[in-house]
Image (tube, rainbow, N blue to C red; front, side, top):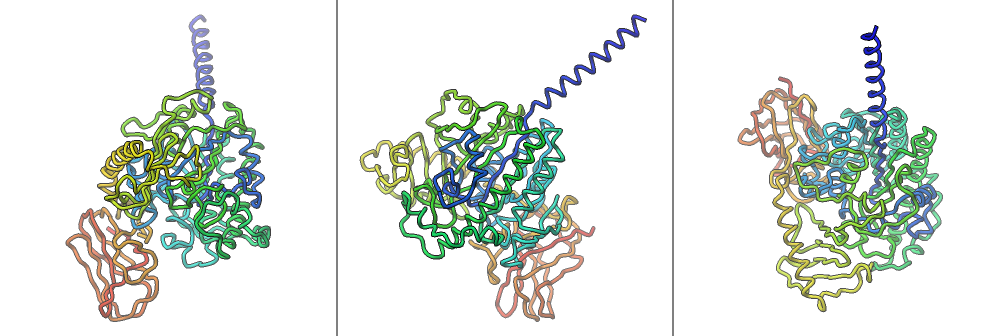
Length: 585
């Protein structure tokens, strides 16, 4: 009898311990990370633009902790790799937005992989832009649910399922759901938001990470007409002239682009409203971290809060963006934090808030922002941030900057420039970077340049940059595989050209393959199709005018290196638009 009572007690205790453990596990907050594409600092009502309609985000910002000096990279893929890993993008292998430079190494640990340690369900909806093939896709990098477009944007050459749709590429698109093509009906931002809301509803009873990554308001500037009608008669130059630091006035094209961008942002605002309402209706708002940010400055000339520069620039107009964080269970909202913060800080901060381990086998460049969020002092208040942007690799000393505390050194000059050729700005006294104070502060500028040089040389020696991640061909995880132009390297600026030298860096499993070569336009008959894979060259004559050439049962060796396809006709060397490779044995 005593034994039975002891057994019963043990069962009760074990049950209670399981319940407590489960309750403790449930204390992990949900995470919703929302990022938009090419929405600048000034594309919100709360940041001073009285022409744009963003009532949801304006109210959300008032309920949030606002990081008022939050920085990203000047362009999208570098920002996204830093956001996902807490590391400068060059460490991850990401050095460009195309030209084969937007593939993140698969050995990187993403926020999604990190949160899965804590039992999170993970989903991405929208733009990834860190590799379109195995092993760099979202479903290879920690995401349980993935609904994305390819490459840097819908309607771009890398996103070949929407590219040929032209001015309808944002409507009724073919997207990639868990690695497979699926047709969707509606406008892209609505589709991504609706599927994010569905993911949240399906996972409301367990910790989840939802990465809602809108591709809008990136070009092409396509938007439902009901949103455009709200802006068709405005003059965006009225907002632009507020504290304008641009070198020229807005053109008529700039004004029309701004109208369309504002319409796209208002659509995003409505979609975020739907998401916030669902979170509230599900009763999980209190325990859900929701972040809103953007990935860089505006691509087109328009209001950006008076700051200098836009997308692609290392000046503040290109790299300072809004960042709002709402987490009612832990932080009071409606407050500003002026300390310097950045995209690289998101991963270590979420790790602390979600009680998971930060990767310990690599350098994490970001800082844990929790002390700042809790109104505590930190010993890194005058931290340094490094910025650059150039095609292929960073260029000394062009479009490169180091910011430290109140001062920022900017290089827009030559590799052998003297310190007097740099720009030095006190961004606290001169937030629009108009007064170059380098001549009267040369010692400070020299010190900042030394630090800039040290960071630059460290980053360009990164293992994942020196040994770029190859696309893996012939793996069961993605067979067939389609190599697209966003991930092609070779000549600078490979886009939709026909006569251009291009290649893909691959790792091929040995075997026999069926291969299709798709061209931008039909190629003429009586040419020859070549496929170079290392020392093995396969070629065949083509007898018909066609936009697709097929090679059947091609034996390829094990190879790691450049895959070079081209069609030769009358001295012309024509590069395929995409290449499909299917391993058949």
